[in-house]
Length: 202
Image 1 (tube, one colour):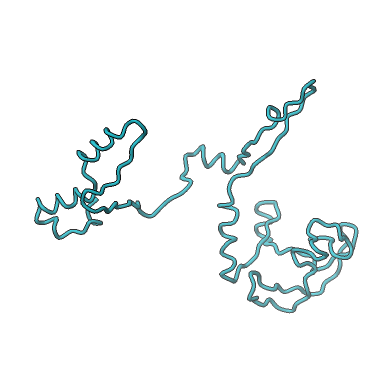
Image 2 (image 1 turned 180 degrees about the vertical axis):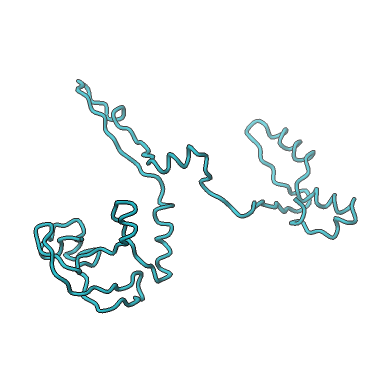
């Protein structure tokens, strides 16, 4: 059951600018209708009221649920049917939101308070994430490798050097051919490779 909120409890956590963010109380409906927005409008029949959380409540206060999941996991699991492309974000919202952070302050009785020493910026790792990492499961995946192919004009290779090591960098650039130069050399030596494109040769 949701609430109470609204006029009966304006200080409820779900209240924002005088209205419930979850859009309760819901209206009574004789049938479920699909909405243009994210969620459908569920059927809510008028029924007997029950007393809970200090007030009378009916079907307008009921949060969508699945009886099978409720009994199987012994926990309330919100169940909604997403009928719009706008709902795609809910698939990834909690998976890719990043890890949780905890800001902790360790205080002790000291004559001189040292704020930097007592402040710890910590990362909070929940049990599912810890188990996922302990099992060595992949954190990401990709379909294929992407490799950049550098292209340059003759005698205009890119040279990267560090301070006081310019000569070594120039010598290495002269002696080491680039990927593009090796492709040209391969085309000159092998007639079969002349039929291949640059992207076809690893």
